[in-house]
Image (cartoon, rainbow, N blue to C red):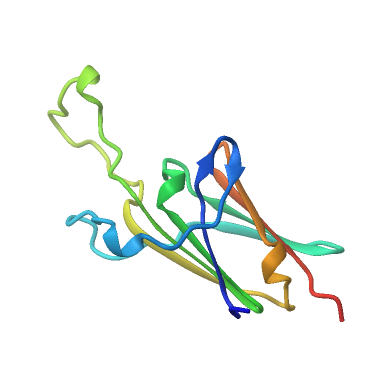
Length: 136
């Protein structure tokens, strides 16, 4: 058994499927100076660790989640949010505070988790990861 599990978050017919990582094929924005870190909330519950990741505007197919016994790594990219063609071309930049381009966040875990039972779902711009604790 592979000691690590890569989960490519891709919703096909409403189901979460495991596929190999395609990050090497991503074209990250040339304007983003460096990878940014999305904000998280992490909770230790009775039987699992739950992690909520703020990934508003990130396409589900561009999220790569690696689950290891004592850590998770979340990688991907967010495109630069700009006005659409229907709204007209931007004439002046007034503020630019939303991070974009490649991101990466590593979260060390306080206990070992069951890699094969890890689940993730994205709703309302938040990625919820559920990591069942390994039985002692």
